[in-house]
Length: 269
Image 1 (spheres, rainbow, N blue to C red):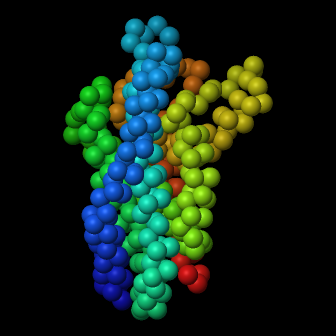
Image 2: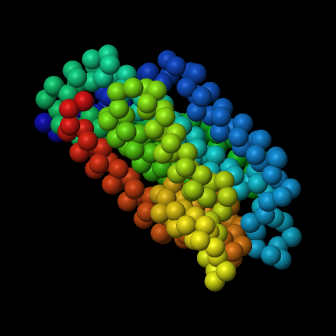
């Protein structure tokens, strides 16, 4: 039975990859928008943005600060596109055929999620080629560390997309829900602006934003990417989790979302 489950998972993952390579426009959709946003916002805010500690001669510009968030945005967009296949497979009758087969539901979830994760990482790696021009520490350890972060982030986001796609039967509704949920998650992750540290003078709005950003699982994915790519530290007026905490929250997010996806998959499609 175990071999059957593994075979089913690998077949579903391979099917996602074949579908992806037959639709090259998905690459443009998942990379084009984050790339344009990175260039427009990065160049536009470059002269008015600084998160480096006071006293340092070279400030981290917005193009540099914004790039880790752009990588996570690529993963997020790819999760949206990849998990749409759940709705499409249901409308075409393919999903119902898979569900009546003698394979456990977790293998179906794993196959779909692994396929989406591989696609997301491939597109993020394409985007990462731009980072050659950024002051990243290009060594084997840093590259492997960054690759692991991208895999974990893509896995968690694809599981989240799977959960939502399983509950919905309309592609248009899926896009609306994903944009309503994921865009605020991304904006509150520290990708676009740093997390303000609380002080005695902090307003109610600053306190709310601070805790919303700390409770956002994407915050820790973005923080991992930023800390691995750059050695510079943010000013004390901003909050940033350490590597250990960020990895723990990221892996916990992946595990929780996969368990939820498996539970959701037990329900009728």
